[in-house]
Image 1 (cartoon, one colour):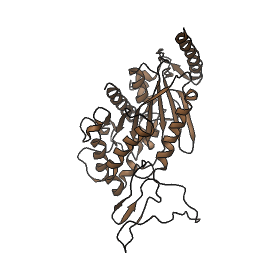
Image 2 (cartoon, rainbow, N blue to C red; image 1 turned 90 degrees about the horizontal axis):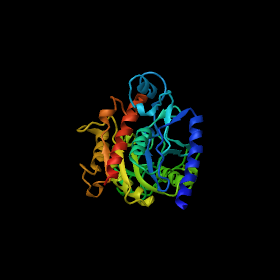
Image 3 (spheres, rainbow, N blue to C red; image 1 turned 30 degrees about the horizontal axis):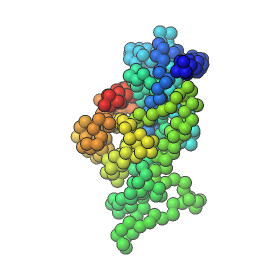
Image 4 (cartoon, rainbow, N blue to C red; image 1 turned 120 degrees about the vertical axis):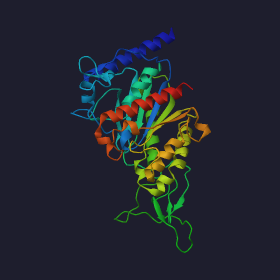
Length: 355
């Protein structure tokens, strides 16, 4: 009896939220009511600008609208009436540093641009019976070796400079020429002589902090939820580090620590981790971009070199989906790139969840 009452209440809450989706110009997909007695499966999305999303929704060639209506791709996104579908089992929440909560809605197409969250969310929604939350917390132009540096990361030296460890500032400073060893960092002041309010790992702290805030207010973000489980992480990042010989050379070490630290900070030791490579990075290529690619491939649980990641980390090689574009160029705003990479990441997560 009590279980039936709980489920009925959840359906009422869900119905009222669906009305909001309809009024926003979306059509609810064929109903697949999630089992609200189960904990919400939370998937946290992190990275930089391409994870934020730069795929055009409307317009001509390259837009999502054109891909769906004229190229017969991603038909599941649009109803017969020409309106974007809104799922009733996948919640999309987006936070951004300095801007707070940007979205809190059923998974649908809204705003002016998309990221990989659409392909990810629909893939997971189709595969799971439990309610799903896609929780994105990221901002553009951030380096894993600086802004997203995870706690515990140490300083290192490269070509006469010391590079910051976690909580250090500035990003780097010169080795003491007299001692030939690392020194304490100098004061970091702006042009007005005031201390700069930034440090190594600030984005890690704030992006994960925003995600934790959303989870602490679970009912606000998924009304009717009975609890949550952080089931996985998604990561699409690397452009900023590929612009630095020092940071690209350190990328693999930082990435391994990043994966482990996220699981620790969210008390989710069994959470799966899926990342996508930079679209312009080609296997066998060199340079800084090649170093980042090698790091991305090294953590893959099937073909990489870390036994502890077997069955729980997967790398999606995105070059075949990039349509000749680059991460720094945001793939020309082509929505198909973001959809294809998102679908591939989502399916990779589905496979990991079977383990």
